[in-house]
Image (cartoon, rainbow, N blue to C red; front, top):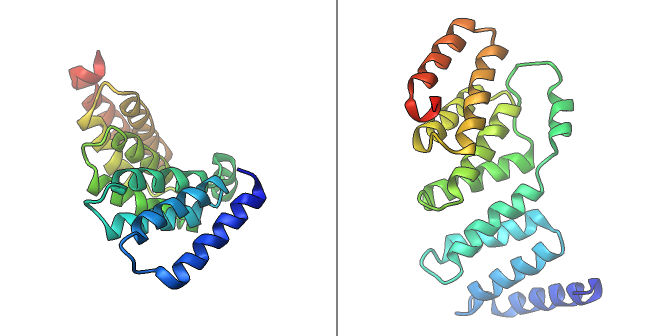
Length: 193
């Protein structure tokens, strides 16, 4: 789509909802408006509409797609690892989540609650846990890393989780905890193999 066509379509959606916000087609129209905003790289706006669809029609035909798309949109709006590293520096003090990260957190927690059996749930859980880790929110990160390891110990996500979980102990200079957790992880035959 050309930029002018996208702008024209965005205007048409705005006009539609000005007069027909409560029609039976509103959910479908909001979903496709979210798709347009995603194409326009308006990540936060598209995610907001995807989540609107999720909240309004949990049994509808667009629910699953909107739930996944909300995560994808919000993930594109996250700060880069370099930006987070620059903010954190060498500190291990807990940092508040930046607004895009906080929005991702809300959507990720909703996704994990609403779609616990989805094939995408382990990746969403890992992404959120890594963000917690990057913001030095070690308790939240550790809890999710432990879940990832418990639920699928042979996965790539579990390998990442195990490494970062051990790194949390190193960052805190807790070598006894590091050794204990390392021993516990290696005692699990699915991990040690």
